[in-house]
Amino acid sequence: MTYQFDRSALRIGQISVIVVLALGFVLDIEAFIYFGAYLLGAALVAPRYAPQLWAYRFLVRQGLVRTEIHDEDPTPHRFAQKMGFGVLVIGVASSVLGLSAVAWGAALMVVTLALINVTTGFCAGCFVHAQLARLRS
Image (cartoon, rainbow, N blue to C red; front, side):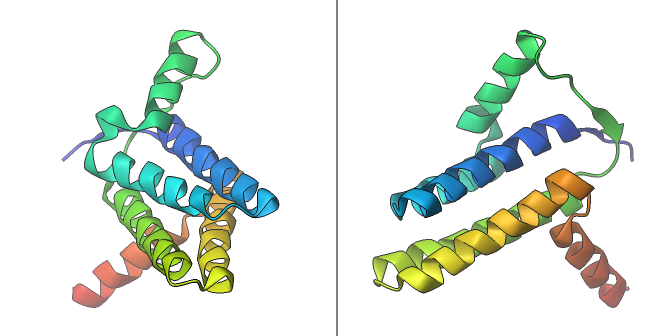
């Protein structure tokens, strides 16, 4: 089966999460972890309404960003997003429990892996997905 997958939309989403979480860390505002989790959750549950994808569509319309359509299965990337969302949920729960160091550790792990993906193209979540698929077969 052939899928149409836009890597530019994914990259803009990752950059949005990186900026939100890094800014929250620098300003020491844990609510930014909640917003980062919201961004990832919205992209997973209702991508049409995710703020970072609104921004992406605006940038495309303005000619500032080009779509980068590839024929590939988006499943590994969605798995990676789910992993990132899960880690940020741990960060949110830790923040609610007053465990700031754990909350920021979770947030910075997401920032680090998203930054590696944006800069090098290596997707850690996609790698985990492939290894799990290999183990299942």
